[in-house]
Image 1 (cartoon, each protein chain N blue to C red):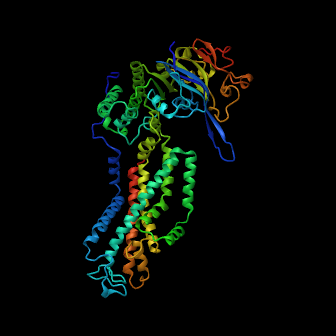
Image 2 (image 1 turned 60 degrees about the vertical axis):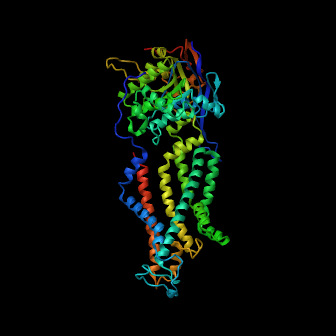
Image 3 (image 1 turned 180 degrees about the vertical axis):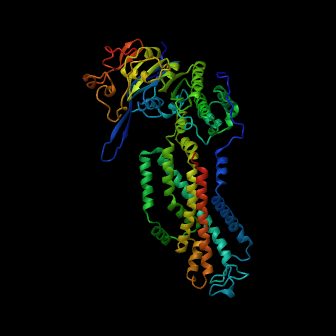
Length: 327
Length: 293
């Protein structure tokens, strides 16, 4: 088993809201005690509903959002509390691809400037080499070299996402957080971008934390999957194992919600009702119990720990042993 | 080589933000008209005094005593000291426009820096800078200016500084709100993920994106500065005679309003049309620089 490149331990990201002189305000527990690891060369999928804390988690491992508590280590080095100079050096090894290719490119800069800035900030190459390298990067993501002179608004969504990927690759990272990189694209374009990510991953030996909610995309790309609900990990397993043998009712519900392209298949489905509870006042005990069809009284008592139930498979559910969720 | 298919892109020349903004601006007739008026006015006040046969403080002693009528020699008449009114109007325009422009530049610089730091760093930096802005806003302008003028006679430089110091607050608030919104945008976050520091994020990424509203505010500030300078000079606390400005021309003409209205009306109209043009220009720039895409 390869060593862990990124290791997140008991990470918490809390946002204070409504704090004034008179009232202490409340706390949004966006990420609440998450532990996970991404091994070298591995693609880990992070799934969950909107509001489950996926994006916040992705940003906090890059310290774009400051973690409230817990630890993030990258290649053995603790990232929380690292001085800015060292953090800047580390940033060349960890990058991010954003969800919205319209918002993630500076509209006032040409594509060459956008990608060149990455080289400039990390003193990669000099003047002329940089132009050359920008051209190489554009070709690598399937755009012509001449694209460097143009501005973001002259490109389609898929092309812009390619530019965003080229920017992330410019600094030769080992690790990339891909924050729902295809959710904002047309379905016909999604496959191209996913294939591009898959190809690049193999060619460059990248490790990825791939955030998404399309389970078929996750299954195609990822080696392991982490299921997040209300800022907590519900279940984590290898992709094959998770899809074939989900152990947490929430995972099962997510799988059931995905459409199956065969109208004759009749399934026993778990359908979730209602919305995600408020992360300001999460339910006691298991946070999923308010929407879980198998919830019992004991579920409200204590927060279920993440327990190992097989090789590389953990689940946070006190009833995991007795429930049979396999179809 | 990973992906063999290279995507086709447009073949028209690349379109920078500036080029597209210019195209949109030219579609606003009132704004173009305003700009044309201001350019014409600038040419007149720069070259007019060179052409005029009179100097701004040259007196015709035969006409001293009361305002002279409009004649072929003196198109807008003469004042009670026998000075040519048109020459003084043009020369006054030079002073008023220069003070207005310089005051607006100072106010925009101060407002942008204050707003940028408050909006970008938030927290106590924001609280400190914005409470200071509130204090400045709550000082009544005219009494303060009267007090200052009582202490010293302002020359042009000091007057510019005073005007600039009194009108930057609106710009600061505007820039702060722009920075607060823009710092959360993904392209700023992308630059931060690449390791860009605070100054680079502020001045390379956020400021150019906020340049539209700042330009509009700067343009409108020229109007405010001209008005403020005129008001101060009208009250006798701005530029001191014999140097004319539109404000002190109005002031000295006001006592002759019933007998020689031709002395008061031109500087009044000049102020009116200049400020109006500046505002049209500002509106046009707003539409051109901040398109609702």
